[in-house]
Image (tube, rainbow, N blue to C red; front, side, top):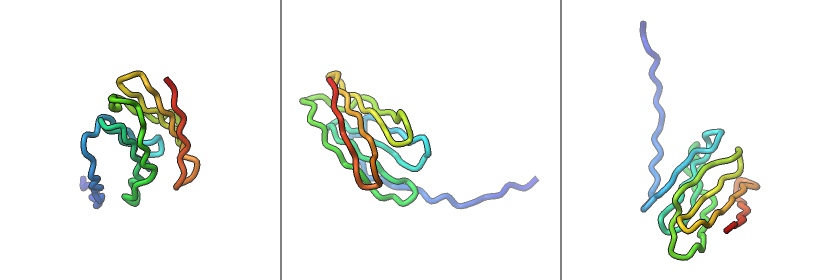
Length: 99
């Protein structure tokens, strides 16, 4: 039995102090949250970064991040602060904060 091999290009992202990462349900987008409160989203098919969001949460960094639908993810911070990000277009994000 022979196996088919195919080349899958790698994606190299420059991220420092990442505290949480999660792929969207489609697998197309990768969201990353950092200890400094920065949230970034990449289109993994092109390697292009979208949606850099800086969250003003005091001294707390991001502790978790998860997609809750194909276009919405929630990021939680150590101080109890939550941020909901809705991807409205490929170049627009709507951010709502909750404490």
